[in-house]
Length: 459
Ligand code: ADP
Image: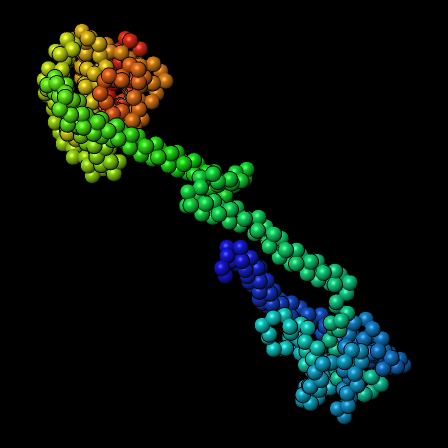
Protein backbone atom coordinates (compact mmCIF):
# COMPACT_ATOMS: atom_id res chain seq x y z
CA UNK A 1 0.00 0.00 0.00
CA UNK A 2 2.11 2.83 -1.28
CA UNK A 3 -0.07 5.85 -1.74
CA UNK A 4 -2.60 7.45 0.55
CA UNK A 5 -5.12 6.99 -2.27
CA UNK A 6 -4.75 3.21 -2.34
CA UNK A 7 -4.65 3.05 1.47
CA UNK A 8 -7.88 4.99 1.78
CA UNK A 9 -9.71 2.79 -0.75
CA UNK A 10 -8.45 -0.44 0.76
CA UNK A 11 -9.34 0.68 4.30
CA UNK A 12 -12.86 1.86 3.30
CA UNK A 13 -13.65 -1.32 1.37
CA UNK A 14 -12.11 -3.38 4.19
CA UNK A 15 -14.39 -1.62 6.65
CA UNK A 16 -17.41 -2.35 4.43
CA UNK A 17 -16.41 -6.02 4.26
CA UNK A 18 -15.99 -6.25 8.04
CA UNK A 19 -19.40 -4.59 8.55
CA UNK A 20 -21.03 -7.14 6.22
CA UNK A 21 -19.31 -9.98 8.04
CA UNK A 22 -20.43 -8.70 11.43
CA UNK A 23 -23.99 -8.19 10.18
CA UNK A 24 -23.95 -11.77 8.88
CA UNK A 25 -22.73 -13.21 12.19
CA UNK A 26 -25.30 -11.20 14.16
CA UNK A 27 -28.19 -12.20 11.87
CA UNK A 28 -27.04 -15.84 12.03
CA UNK A 29 -27.16 -15.71 15.83
CA UNK A 30 -30.64 -14.23 15.55
CA UNK A 31 -31.65 -17.05 13.19
CA UNK A 32 -30.27 -19.74 15.51
CA UNK A 33 -31.85 -18.23 18.65
CA UNK A 34 -35.21 -16.98 17.39
CA UNK A 35 -36.04 -17.87 13.81
CA UNK A 36 -35.08 -21.56 13.84
CA UNK A 37 -37.55 -22.62 16.58
CA UNK A 38 -40.23 -20.47 14.96
CA UNK A 39 -39.56 -21.98 11.55
CA UNK A 40 -39.62 -25.51 13.01
CA UNK A 41 -42.89 -24.82 14.82
CA UNK A 42 -44.53 -23.34 11.73
CA UNK A 43 -43.56 -26.25 9.48
CA UNK A 44 -44.63 -28.82 12.11
CA UNK A 45 -48.10 -27.29 12.05
CA UNK A 46 -48.18 -27.42 8.23
CA UNK A 47 -47.03 -31.09 8.25
CA UNK A 48 -49.64 -32.02 10.86
CA UNK A 49 -52.34 -30.28 8.81
CA UNK A 50 -51.33 -32.16 5.66
CA UNK A 51 -51.35 -35.48 7.55
CA UNK A 52 -54.72 -34.69 9.15
CA UNK A 53 -56.25 -33.79 5.78
CA UNK A 54 -55.00 -37.05 4.16
CA UNK A 55 -56.34 -39.05 7.07
CA UNK A 56 -59.80 -37.46 6.93
CA UNK A 57 -60.05 -37.77 3.12
CA UNK A 58 -59.32 -41.45 2.35
CA UNK A 59 -61.03 -41.12 -1.06
CA UNK A 60 -58.50 -38.72 -2.59
CA UNK A 61 -55.33 -39.95 -4.26
CA UNK A 62 -52.49 -39.47 -1.75
CA UNK A 63 -49.90 -39.05 -4.52
CA UNK A 64 -51.90 -36.40 -6.32
CA UNK A 65 -52.60 -34.61 -3.05
CA UNK A 66 -48.95 -34.53 -2.03
CA UNK A 67 -47.97 -33.50 -5.56
CA UNK A 68 -50.31 -30.54 -5.33
CA UNK A 69 -48.76 -29.55 -1.96
CA UNK A 70 -45.31 -29.33 -3.60
CA UNK A 71 -46.76 -26.76 -6.03
CA UNK A 72 -47.29 -24.29 -3.17
CA UNK A 73 -43.62 -24.53 -2.16
CA UNK A 74 -42.74 -27.72 -0.32
CA UNK A 75 -40.42 -30.66 -0.81
CA UNK A 76 -41.84 -33.96 0.43
CA UNK A 77 -40.59 -37.49 1.17
CA UNK A 78 -43.09 -40.23 2.06
CA UNK A 79 -41.81 -43.42 3.74
CA UNK A 80 -43.97 -46.53 4.15
CA UNK A 81 -43.64 -49.23 6.82
CA UNK A 82 -41.31 -51.22 4.53
CA UNK A 83 -38.91 -48.31 4.34
CA UNK A 84 -39.80 -47.44 0.71
CA UNK A 85 -39.36 -43.76 0.03
CA UNK A 86 -41.32 -41.68 -2.48
CA UNK A 87 -40.23 -38.09 -3.25
CA UNK A 88 -42.45 -35.24 -4.33
CA UNK A 89 -41.39 -31.85 -5.71
CA UNK A 90 -37.78 -30.58 -5.99
CA UNK A 91 -35.27 -33.34 -5.25
CA UNK A 92 -33.28 -33.20 -1.98
CA UNK A 93 -29.54 -32.59 -2.42
CA UNK A 94 -28.78 -34.99 0.39
CA UNK A 95 -31.21 -37.83 0.97
CA UNK A 96 -29.60 -39.52 3.95
CA UNK A 97 -31.91 -40.11 6.88
CA UNK A 98 -31.51 -42.83 9.47
CA UNK A 99 -33.90 -45.82 9.38
CA UNK A 100 -34.54 -45.36 13.12
CA UNK A 101 -35.78 -41.83 12.54
CA UNK A 102 -38.14 -43.04 9.81
CA UNK A 103 -39.35 -45.83 12.09
CA UNK A 104 -39.79 -43.43 15.04
CA UNK A 105 -42.06 -41.23 12.97
CA UNK A 106 -44.11 -44.19 11.70
CA UNK A 107 -44.45 -45.12 15.37
CA UNK A 108 -46.12 -41.80 16.07
CA UNK A 109 -43.21 -39.44 17.01
CA UNK A 110 -42.67 -36.07 15.48
CA UNK A 111 -39.19 -35.46 13.94
CA UNK A 112 -37.91 -31.88 14.43
CA UNK A 113 -35.11 -31.96 11.82
CA UNK A 114 -35.17 -28.18 11.27
CA UNK A 115 -34.64 -27.42 14.98
CA UNK A 116 -32.02 -30.15 15.40
CA UNK A 117 -30.12 -29.28 12.23
CA UNK A 118 -26.47 -28.69 13.29
CA UNK A 119 -25.58 -24.98 13.82
CA UNK A 120 -23.58 -23.54 10.96
CA UNK A 121 -21.46 -20.38 11.16
CA UNK A 122 -23.74 -18.70 8.69
CA UNK A 123 -27.49 -18.86 8.06
CA UNK A 124 -26.82 -21.82 5.79
CA UNK A 125 -28.88 -24.18 7.95
CA UNK A 126 -31.92 -22.41 6.64
CA UNK A 127 -30.93 -23.08 3.04
CA UNK A 128 -29.60 -26.66 3.45
CA UNK A 129 -31.62 -28.79 1.01
CA UNK A 130 -31.24 -32.03 2.99
CA UNK A 131 -33.67 -34.68 4.06
CA UNK A 132 -32.25 -34.27 7.57
CA UNK A 133 -33.43 -30.68 7.55
CA UNK A 134 -37.15 -31.53 7.48
CA UNK A 135 -40.13 -32.02 9.77
CA UNK A 136 -41.39 -35.58 10.04
CA UNK A 137 -44.94 -36.50 11.12
CA UNK A 138 -46.87 -39.78 11.02
CA UNK A 139 -49.56 -39.95 8.34
CA UNK A 140 -52.41 -42.46 8.38
CA UNK A 141 -54.09 -43.14 5.07
CA UNK A 142 -56.60 -45.89 4.39
CA UNK A 143 -55.42 -47.84 7.45
CA UNK A 144 -51.74 -47.70 6.45
CA UNK A 145 -49.17 -45.61 8.39
CA UNK A 146 -46.52 -43.54 6.63
CA UNK A 147 -43.83 -41.13 7.71
CA UNK A 148 -44.25 -37.76 6.01
CA UNK A 149 -41.11 -35.52 5.80
CA UNK A 150 -41.52 -31.96 4.50
CA UNK A 151 -39.47 -28.76 4.23
CA UNK A 152 -40.11 -25.46 2.47
CA UNK A 153 -38.75 -25.34 -1.10
CA UNK A 154 -36.05 -22.63 -1.04
CA UNK A 155 -36.58 -21.85 -4.74
CA UNK A 156 -40.09 -20.70 -3.89
CA UNK A 157 -38.69 -18.39 -1.22
CA UNK A 158 -36.59 -16.59 -3.81
CA UNK A 159 -39.45 -14.79 -5.43
CA UNK A 160 -39.36 -11.50 -7.40
CA UNK A 161 -39.04 -9.39 -4.23
CA UNK A 162 -35.99 -11.25 -3.09
CA UNK A 163 -34.39 -10.93 -6.52
CA UNK A 164 -35.20 -7.21 -6.48
CA UNK A 165 -33.58 -6.82 -3.04
CA UNK A 166 -30.54 -8.76 -4.23
CA UNK A 167 -30.20 -6.37 -7.18
CA UNK A 168 -30.58 -3.35 -4.92
CA UNK A 169 -27.87 -4.69 -2.62
CA UNK A 170 -25.56 -5.54 -5.52
CA UNK A 171 -26.00 -2.13 -7.17
CA UNK A 172 -25.58 -0.32 -3.83
CA UNK A 173 -22.29 -2.13 -3.14
CA UNK A 174 -20.95 -1.45 -6.66
CA UNK A 175 -21.95 2.21 -6.55
CA UNK A 176 -20.42 2.64 -3.07
CA UNK A 177 -17.13 1.20 -4.29
CA UNK A 178 -17.13 3.49 -7.37
CA UNK A 179 -17.95 6.52 -5.21
CA UNK A 180 -15.25 5.64 -2.70
CA UNK A 181 -12.73 5.47 -5.56
CA UNK A 182 -13.84 8.85 -7.00
CA UNK A 183 -14.30 10.61 -3.67
CA UNK A 184 -10.92 9.44 -2.43
CA UNK A 185 -9.32 10.96 -5.51
CA UNK A 186 -11.09 14.26 -4.70
CA UNK A 187 -9.82 14.07 -1.12
CA UNK A 188 -6.27 13.01 -1.88
CA UNK A 189 -5.60 15.21 -4.93
CA UNK A 190 -5.09 18.45 -2.94
CA UNK A 191 -2.60 16.62 -0.76
CA UNK A 192 -0.67 15.52 -3.85
CA UNK A 193 -0.79 19.15 -5.03
CA UNK A 194 0.57 20.27 -1.67
CA UNK A 195 3.39 17.75 -1.97
CA UNK A 196 4.23 19.13 -5.42
CA UNK A 197 4.13 22.68 -4.03
CA UNK A 198 6.43 21.69 -1.15
CA UNK A 199 8.93 20.23 -3.59
CA UNK A 200 8.86 23.33 -5.75
CA UNK A 201 9.32 25.48 -2.62
CA UNK A 202 12.27 23.34 -1.58
CA UNK A 203 13.82 24.08 -4.98
CA UNK A 204 13.58 27.80 -4.27
CA UNK A 205 10.51 28.50 -6.41
CA UNK A 206 8.20 30.53 -4.16
CA UNK A 207 5.58 31.09 -6.85
CA UNK A 208 3.32 28.20 -5.89
CA UNK A 209 -0.34 28.01 -6.93
CA UNK A 210 -2.82 26.16 -4.73
CA UNK A 211 -6.60 25.82 -4.65
CA UNK A 212 -7.70 27.72 -1.55
CA UNK A 213 -11.42 27.78 -2.32
CA UNK A 214 -12.17 24.73 -0.18
CA UNK A 215 -13.62 25.46 3.23
CA UNK A 216 -12.41 22.34 5.00
CA UNK A 217 -9.21 21.37 6.81
CA UNK A 218 -7.39 20.83 3.51
CA UNK A 219 -8.41 24.32 2.34
CA UNK A 220 -7.08 25.69 5.63
CA UNK A 221 -3.85 23.76 5.18
CA UNK A 222 -3.43 25.15 1.64
CA UNK A 223 -4.06 28.65 3.02
CA UNK A 224 -1.42 28.24 5.71
CA UNK A 225 0.96 26.77 3.17
CA UNK A 226 0.56 29.77 0.86
CA UNK A 227 1.05 32.15 3.80
CA UNK A 228 4.23 30.26 4.70
CA UNK A 229 5.43 30.43 1.07
CA UNK A 230 4.87 34.23 0.96
CA UNK A 231 6.68 34.64 4.29
CA UNK A 232 9.58 32.52 3.09
CA UNK A 233 9.73 34.57 -0.08
CA UNK A 234 9.83 37.78 1.95
CA UNK A 235 12.55 36.37 4.15
CA UNK A 236 14.50 35.26 1.11
CA UNK A 237 14.19 38.75 -0.38
CA UNK A 238 15.27 40.25 2.94
CA UNK A 239 18.26 37.92 3.08
CA UNK A 240 19.29 38.88 -0.46
CA UNK A 241 18.87 42.59 0.29
CA UNK A 242 20.76 42.17 3.54
CA UNK A 243 23.71 40.54 1.79
CA UNK A 244 23.77 43.19 -0.92
CA UNK A 245 23.63 45.94 1.76
CA UNK A 246 26.45 44.41 3.75
CA UNK A 247 28.54 43.94 0.62
CA UNK A 248 28.00 47.57 -0.30
CA UNK A 249 28.68 48.87 3.23
CA UNK A 250 31.89 46.89 3.45
CA UNK A 251 32.99 47.59 -0.10
CA UNK A 252 32.71 51.39 0.02
CA UNK A 253 34.93 52.01 3.08
CA UNK A 254 37.41 49.45 1.73
CA UNK A 255 37.69 51.23 -1.61
CA UNK A 256 38.04 54.56 0.22
CA UNK A 257 40.84 53.10 2.33
CA UNK A 258 42.49 51.67 -0.77
CA UNK A 259 42.19 54.98 -2.65
CA UNK A 260 43.51 57.18 0.15
CA UNK A 261 46.32 54.79 1.07
CA UNK A 262 47.62 54.84 -2.52
CA UNK A 263 47.38 58.63 -2.42
CA UNK A 264 49.53 58.54 0.72
CA UNK A 265 52.21 56.80 -1.27
CA UNK A 266 52.67 59.79 -3.58
CA UNK A 267 55.57 62.05 -2.55
CA UNK A 268 54.05 65.28 -3.83
CA UNK A 269 51.30 65.62 -1.19
CA UNK A 270 51.53 68.21 1.54
CA UNK A 271 51.63 67.51 5.26
CA UNK A 272 48.06 68.78 5.69
CA UNK A 273 46.78 66.55 2.91
CA UNK A 274 48.59 63.56 4.41
CA UNK A 275 47.02 64.06 7.83
CA UNK A 276 43.62 64.61 6.21
CA UNK A 277 43.92 61.28 4.31
CA UNK A 278 45.07 59.44 7.43
CA UNK A 279 42.08 60.80 9.31
CA UNK A 280 39.71 59.66 6.49
CA UNK A 281 41.30 56.20 6.52
CA UNK A 282 40.91 56.06 10.32
CA UNK A 283 37.28 57.06 10.19
CA UNK A 284 36.59 54.45 7.47
CA UNK A 285 38.29 51.80 9.62
CA UNK A 286 36.14 52.94 12.56
CA UNK A 287 33.05 52.65 10.40
CA UNK A 288 34.00 49.13 9.31
CA UNK A 289 34.68 48.16 12.90
CA UNK A 290 31.29 49.53 14.07
CA UNK A 291 29.56 47.74 11.21
CA UNK A 292 31.13 44.37 11.99
CA UNK A 293 30.40 44.78 15.71
CA UNK A 294 26.77 45.59 14.96
CA UNK A 295 26.49 42.68 12.53
CA UNK A 296 27.95 40.30 15.08
CA UNK A 297 25.54 41.59 17.71
CA UNK A 298 22.56 41.23 15.34
CA UNK A 299 23.64 37.71 14.43
CA UNK A 300 23.82 36.67 18.08
CA UNK A 301 20.50 38.42 18.83
CA UNK A 302 18.93 36.51 15.93
CA UNK A 303 20.15 33.29 17.41
CA UNK A 304 18.09 34.27 20.47
CA UNK A 305 17.64 33.52 24.18
CA UNK A 306 21.05 32.39 25.38
CA UNK A 307 22.60 35.76 24.76
CA UNK A 308 20.46 37.33 27.54
CA UNK A 309 22.09 37.53 30.94
CA UNK A 310 19.39 39.04 33.09
CA UNK A 311 19.98 40.51 36.52
CA UNK A 312 18.67 43.29 38.75
CA UNK A 313 20.37 46.64 38.16
CA UNK A 314 19.82 50.34 38.70
CA UNK A 315 18.48 51.78 35.45
CA UNK A 316 18.78 55.43 36.59
CA UNK A 317 22.42 54.96 37.44
CA UNK A 318 23.15 53.22 34.12
CA UNK A 319 21.64 56.13 32.15
CA UNK A 320 23.53 58.75 34.22
CA UNK A 321 26.84 57.01 33.45
CA UNK A 322 25.98 56.93 29.77
CA UNK A 323 25.16 60.63 29.76
CA UNK A 324 28.58 61.34 31.29
CA UNK A 325 30.27 59.38 28.49
CA UNK A 326 28.59 61.59 25.89
CA UNK A 327 29.36 64.87 27.64
CA UNK A 328 32.05 65.86 25.14
CA UNK A 329 29.82 65.20 22.09
CA UNK A 330 26.99 67.14 23.70
CA UNK A 331 29.09 70.15 24.47
CA UNK A 332 30.78 69.93 21.07
CA UNK A 333 27.38 70.55 19.42
CA UNK A 334 26.38 72.96 22.18
CA UNK A 335 23.34 70.85 22.98
CA UNK A 336 21.34 71.46 26.15
CA UNK A 337 20.96 68.08 27.81
CA UNK A 338 18.58 67.71 30.76
CA UNK A 339 17.43 64.58 32.50
CA UNK A 340 15.28 63.21 35.26
CA UNK A 341 16.74 59.81 36.16
CA UNK A 342 15.54 58.53 39.54
CA UNK A 343 16.97 55.29 40.94
CA UNK A 344 14.79 52.48 39.64
CA UNK A 345 15.82 48.85 39.78
CA UNK A 346 14.74 46.59 36.96
CA UNK A 347 15.51 43.05 35.83
CA UNK A 348 17.12 42.80 32.41
CA UNK A 349 20.38 42.37 30.57
CA UNK A 350 22.35 45.53 31.57
CA UNK A 351 24.84 45.23 28.75
CA UNK A 352 22.22 44.83 25.99
CA UNK A 353 20.02 47.59 27.46
CA UNK A 354 23.08 49.85 27.59
CA UNK A 355 23.41 49.27 23.83
CA UNK A 356 19.78 50.43 23.46
CA UNK A 357 20.30 53.69 25.40
CA UNK A 358 23.66 54.25 23.69
CA UNK A 359 22.00 54.03 20.25
CA UNK A 360 19.09 56.28 21.19
CA UNK A 361 21.30 58.91 22.82
CA UNK A 362 23.91 58.89 20.04
CA UNK A 363 21.11 59.27 17.46
CA UNK A 364 19.57 62.13 19.46
CA UNK A 365 22.95 63.85 19.34
CA UNK A 366 23.85 62.90 15.74
CA UNK A 367 20.53 64.01 14.27
CA UNK A 368 20.26 67.11 16.47
CA UNK A 369 20.86 70.69 15.42
CA UNK A 370 23.57 72.94 16.72
CA UNK A 371 22.31 74.42 20.05
CA UNK A 372 19.46 71.90 20.14
CA UNK A 373 18.28 70.16 23.27
CA UNK A 374 17.81 66.61 24.54
CA UNK A 375 15.66 65.48 27.43
CA UNK A 376 15.93 62.02 28.98
CA UNK A 377 13.53 60.75 31.62
CA UNK A 378 12.47 57.63 33.46
CA UNK A 379 8.94 57.12 34.77
CA UNK A 380 7.54 54.22 36.68
CA UNK A 381 4.04 53.11 35.71
CA UNK A 382 2.65 50.13 37.61
CA UNK A 383 4.81 47.16 36.62
CA UNK A 384 6.60 48.95 33.79
CA UNK A 385 9.26 51.58 33.43
CA UNK A 386 9.10 54.17 30.66
CA UNK A 387 12.31 55.66 29.30
CA UNK A 388 11.94 58.69 27.03
CA UNK A 389 14.53 60.33 24.75
CA UNK A 390 13.28 63.61 23.35
CA UNK A 391 15.35 65.70 20.96
CA UNK A 392 14.90 68.85 18.94
CA UNK A 393 16.73 67.45 15.92
CA UNK A 394 15.99 67.13 12.22
CA UNK A 395 13.05 64.80 12.80
CA UNK A 396 11.48 62.48 10.24
CA UNK A 397 8.37 62.31 8.09
CA UNK A 398 5.78 59.52 8.38
CA UNK A 399 7.03 57.23 5.56
CA UNK A 400 10.52 57.42 7.06
CA UNK A 401 9.19 56.73 10.54
CA UNK A 402 7.58 53.53 9.33
CA UNK A 403 10.87 52.10 8.15
CA UNK A 404 13.43 53.15 10.74
CA UNK A 405 13.52 49.74 12.46
CA UNK A 406 14.41 47.97 9.21
CA UNK A 407 17.96 46.75 8.88
CA UNK A 408 20.21 49.14 6.94
CA UNK A 409 17.46 51.72 6.59
CA UNK A 410 18.68 55.32 6.78
CA UNK A 411 16.19 58.13 6.33
CA UNK A 412 16.56 60.84 3.69
CA UNK A 413 20.10 60.46 2.37
CA UNK A 414 20.37 64.18 1.54
CA UNK A 415 19.99 65.18 5.18
CA UNK A 416 21.94 62.35 6.77
CA UNK A 417 24.68 62.01 4.16
CA UNK A 418 27.21 63.87 6.26
CA UNK A 419 26.24 61.98 9.39
CA UNK A 420 27.94 58.69 10.05
CA UNK A 421 25.80 55.63 10.45
CA UNK A 422 25.08 52.11 9.30
CA UNK A 423 21.29 51.95 9.55
CA UNK A 424 21.59 48.98 11.91
CA UNK A 425 21.35 50.76 15.28
CA UNK A 426 17.55 50.98 15.61
CA UNK A 427 16.97 47.43 14.34
CA UNK A 428 19.31 46.26 17.11
CA UNK A 429 17.40 48.46 19.60
CA UNK A 430 14.08 46.93 18.54
CA UNK A 431 15.35 43.35 18.74
CA UNK A 432 16.77 43.87 22.25
CA UNK A 433 13.53 45.47 23.47
CA UNK A 434 11.51 42.61 21.97
CA UNK A 435 13.75 40.13 23.78
CA UNK A 436 12.90 41.98 27.02
CA UNK A 437 9.17 41.78 26.17
CA UNK A 438 9.07 45.56 25.98
CA UNK A 439 7.76 48.09 23.44
CA UNK A 440 9.20 51.03 21.56
CA UNK A 441 7.26 53.95 20.09
CA UNK A 442 8.43 56.97 18.10
CA UNK A 443 6.90 60.36 17.54
CA UNK A 444 8.58 62.72 15.15
CA UNK A 445 8.04 65.93 13.21
CA UNK A 446 10.34 66.95 10.44
CA UNK A 447 12.68 69.80 11.47
CA UNK A 448 11.17 69.85 14.95
CA UNK A 449 12.41 66.77 16.70
CA UNK A 450 11.93 63.17 17.65
CA UNK A 451 10.80 61.33 20.77
CA UNK A 452 11.58 57.66 21.40
CA UNK A 453 9.52 56.05 24.17
CA UNK A 454 10.67 52.67 25.49
CA UNK A 455 8.42 50.69 27.79
CA UNK A 456 9.97 47.79 29.73
CA UNK A 457 8.58 45.41 32.31
CA UNK A 458 10.28 45.97 35.66
CA UNK A 459 10.67 42.25 36.30
P1 ADP B 1 22.08 55.00 11.78
O1 ADP B 1 23.32 54.23 11.95
O2 ADP B 1 21.88 55.51 10.42
O3 ADP B 1 21.91 56.05 12.82
P2 ADP B 1 19.79 53.80 13.00
O4 ADP B 1 19.22 52.48 12.79
O5 ADP B 1 20.23 54.18 14.36
O6 ADP B 1 20.96 53.94 11.97
O7 ADP B 1 18.71 54.86 12.54
C1 ADP B 1 18.04 54.66 11.30
C2 ADP B 1 17.67 56.01 10.70
O8 ADP B 1 16.64 56.59 11.50
C3 ADP B 1 18.76 57.00 10.72
O9 ADP B 1 19.56 56.86 9.56
C4 ADP B 1 18.02 58.31 10.76
O10 ADP B 1 17.67 58.68 9.45
C5 ADP B 1 16.76 58.00 11.51
N1 ADP B 1 16.87 58.45 12.93
C6 ADP B 1 17.17 57.70 13.99
N2 ADP B 1 17.14 58.41 15.13
C7 ADP B 1 16.79 59.67 14.78
C8 ADP B 1 16.57 60.89 15.50
N3 ADP B 1 16.71 60.96 16.81
N4 ADP B 1 16.20 61.97 14.79
C9 ADP B 1 16.04 61.91 13.46
N5 ADP B 1 16.24 60.79 12.72
C10 ADP B 1 16.61 59.69 13.36
